[in-house]
Length: 404
Image 1 (cartoon, rainbow, N blue to C red):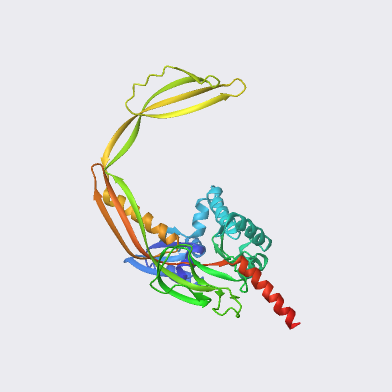
Image 2: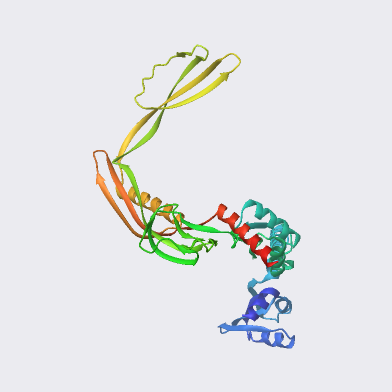
């Protein structure tokens, strides 16, 4: 294979030798140090062989007497260049195109940022531009690890970043840092209240005194863990703590939807009628021209133009005729859409769906579907005690005074 490539680059001839003792041409080639190959006997007085272009030209010029040399075929790069030497552009333009494509592939011509909001993307674009990622930058000079390190150090909002180079594009993947949730001071007295109504499925109390137990029904806003510790002994002071815990409720969510048996579709006919009206606001008088509408079904578009100084307003009402067609509603498809919307709303509120049932009843013109979901949801919310906090601080001050 390598030899074939070399022959194509140098150019090769296939020559046919005819006459008495055609092997003489091979002796001449050997004495002239011309390499011949693929020798084939084609008759008693003829043979063919392959030789390089330069060697073939020498043999064609020095053919012995009574021996005819015929050029059967020529191929290779020199042959092509000689054939198209008068059409230089056909060879030069593709070469220029290939060289230009290669050179352009060494640069970055598109920068795309994936992840984060528009503000964060603008900040990331500025940082990576300072570190070598910009339109027209050389790809081999891009240090992906250095860009990742510098961007994370420069931007507190970024928790992870990476640069992928694909062709002439740079794809920068960004992951925004999750903001630290606001936490109440642990020394601030607080109660835990329920954010939903339901049955307590599971309760874990980390600090405080539970007011309900597992299996009990609680209402939304009810205190379920208190941070107030009162003793029946009047001589023992009341203590206030920051109550906290993990409480899971079991509850039922229900939603009823109406699905009509017929679906109506409006198709404009192209007919339109415009009605102009004049409204005198002071006397509440309205005049209209050509107000009779003969369309059985139509859409109405109204535009108002007011002249406040004169107390007059004009309006133009366009009536567009439509054909109303009805089709039978795909009840199963509509039920699936409404069911998914219902479950998505529950999952959005961090509810875990345990069981989902539906009851569909048929009316004269519609179906009524009732979805009932049995869910588990975390319901604890820590609420500060303002009065308790004041007492807590005053008691703490008295204690500190005594210690001092």
